[in-house]
Amino acid sequence: MSEESKVSNGNVVTNASFILPAGNGTKVCIGGGAGFIGSHIAKRLKENGYHVTVVDWKKNQFMAVDEFCDVFVHDDLRKLEVAVESCLGCKHVYNLAAEMGGMGFICSNESVLSWSNTAISMNLLEAARRCGASQFFYASSACAYNEAKQEDTNNPGLKESDAWPARPQDMYGLEKLYSEEMALTYGRDFNMEIRIARFHNVYGPRGTWKGGREKAPAAFCRKVITSTSEVEIWGDGKQTRSFTYIDDCVEGVLRLMNSDCKDVINLGTTEMVDMISFVKCAMSFENKNMPLKYIEGPVGVRGRNSNNDLIREKLGWEPSISIVDGLRKTYFWIKEEVEKERREGKITNNYNKSEVVEQVDDSLMKLGNPVKRSKLN
Ligand code: NAD
Ligand code: GDD
Image (cartoon, rainbow, N blue to C red; front, side):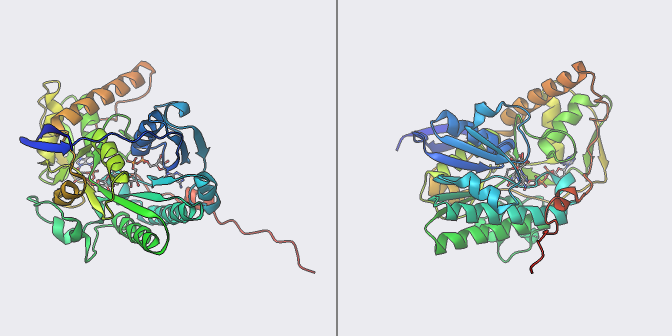
């Protein structure tokens, strides 16, 4: 096996090389494929000769449809018939669809996201089975881990087994854990290989960067770009996380799908930082040096990091793109987006603050309208 080495966090990571097998027209379906991670995966697969169907209820803001897929089903995956129609003839099905966001979204939208995400997960899995897909990928999250293992800023790295016994901090994490188990059960009962990765805070260009759903990397870049006197941070800034640059995430998902790894694995780096250092990293790209203002906000767990023993053992690979490299690309991409909005005359003077998204039930109310039956007799 040939190898490539990269430097991450001061350590040399030796990764086995990998070439994505040519698609030769193999049909794949990507639920949530117009979203951040889904669209990057879809694009890579399409470029490699796969016939890609994307199903998503939103359009991609940054790419034309034919850049990342062959067929775009613009519909709601909480309807089983939409999932089944989209999976017809597909050999591989990827579930990257979810009501998703950073701390400003997942804490304040628990009911609606648990209903919707469970429905999506059930439907795509059942659709993949019915349509005879041989492989199914599920995008899980580090949020699935037991909160008791994340109370210290010096998190030693969450091992996959730390998810059980279960006590995720919120419903988003619990729904992820339930969907993992449902997929694993389908894999045991039916003729379908299941692959599951727990993503650790994925960021990069074309990710959500405003509106309240954005995660810390994009929020910090946007705030540094648009602040003039100080930069706001939710909490005391000592909370820790590890982050994953989008290219590593895509690479990890495709390596996993092309492996025989049946275990649920972490997909994240082991480069853990506190939020103070992280925002200072964002400030360094343009030599800014503003004081930080600590304010109340949804803070999530105290400390989170990935343990990569299992992914190294199973895939001979782990994410290795450093925070400074990944965040720099993200920062200048967001800067360009802000400047574009300014040129278009849009209001950007509230971008130095982050919002918390209020829960609304409008998407739920679109489903389940009373059935009109013709009278019998
Ligand atoms: P994203 O919000 O950019 O993409 C999710 C996509 O799902 C969106 O395009 C959205 O429109 C679509 N979607 C939501 N509800 C739908 C419905 N009812 N019908 C059809 N489409 C629907 O988020 P992302 O960052 O690309 O995340 C992809 C997956 O990875 C999600 O399952 C998410 O929970 C998981 N994940 C992401 C991260 C991260 O840091 N980005 C971390 C852990 C897990
Ligand atoms: N989003 C955001 N915006 N977070 C901020 C901000 C801000 O302006 N200021 C400080 N933070 C802090 C949060 O309070 C939290 O303590 C930390 O930065 C990281 O926040 P997020 O990036 O929003 O979320 P997370 O790491 O707690 O969880 C995310 O990653 C999971 C996977 O690792 C979420 O996106 C989850 O949905 C995801 O599953």
